[in-house]
Length: 465
Ligand code: C2O
Ligand code: CU
Ligand code: CU
Image 1 (tube, helix red, strand yellow):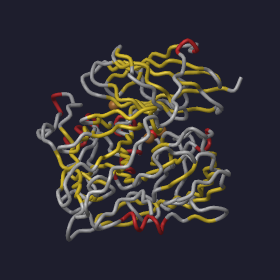
Image 2 (cartoon, protein in one colour):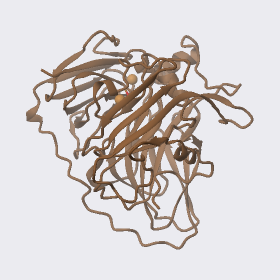
Image 3 (cartoon, protein in one colour):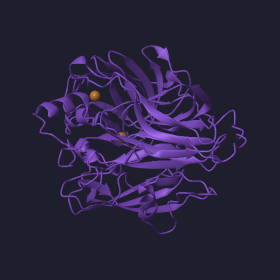
Image 4 (cartoon, helix red, strand yellow):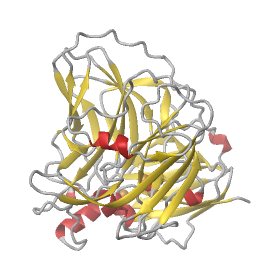
């Protein structure tokens, strides 16, 4: 049987299976063996509530969770699915659920425009578009409070599958990366914004020394010699970027935020900035019984004044253990994965220049009553995102996937679908986007949650005329 979940020793993911409360016409299958061709109706119930977790031995940490688990239940959809998510807010505070990277109607986006008050229920309805198979995630998006709610435990993975997935035969692992920090009493450390720690969090984006993979510290993943596994990695951290490597092995990079590339690319490491996703293949080149480590290599995204002292240390994220089984014959991999058509830059009717400085976009803080960029349904535009300051800012646009054209003038080597792009210190990235279908107001922002919460965000209005 194929699994998209990690065979961890302690498995919150097992709870996840039971928690994906699905009623109605079809189940949100977690291990589909036969891909459906007909569009399905999928119903999911999701409840955000307080619970507690044993994050440190001997203490219990009060958290916020979706359906009682951290991460929340892994959702799995097929392209074409008609989805209804009945969300209930049992938290003492206002929240929303945002389907990061999804192309959905305005009122289903879970942006700050549609808050859900404590005790209220909200129905998110959308159809999963064809061609969007990929790795996504969901998280709260209330005005000014996204960071603390994600830090308390509200985040979960979404996998969208295509009926003709060329890699369907490979075993899968979904890895959600996050980091956290606890107080001495074992509570999630969310300091006063005016304290020393609070100011550092606001500058850097909140980081913690607890590095978690699917809510676990240094879990063990297993592979068989010769086996090829497909890993989907989601960066759900508020500020931390991960320079991923598997000690002693290269990776086959096969996809980014919005799914597969045309062809696999062999790489030694992959940078995943906040909210980004990567898909890669791990080829089991080790001997039976051996092991290796999934590492976060040092990455300097910081300004020198607030750079953490240990930024230059390599950190372990998970152990990859080779089973004792005799090596298997590696499967044949398809030379091409799927067609990814480049959007023709000649179609662009405007270039939007977005200047990032510390905490501001085009010199302004976000204002819910202001429209920063105004356009119409169907328009194709180029966004030029310039980072003026000495710190990376991962830039994200809601509602519409885009293609990176170039980074600092260097053309993107191949086409891929993205919804977030890291703009390193003093660099510029350009992307092209078509505003398909949905009129509404769409946020664009830095995905360092502390920056977003403090107003490093703007509004794109797409009108239907
Ligand atoms: Cu994960 Cu406004 O986004
Ligand atoms: Cu988003
Ligand atoms: Cu930022």
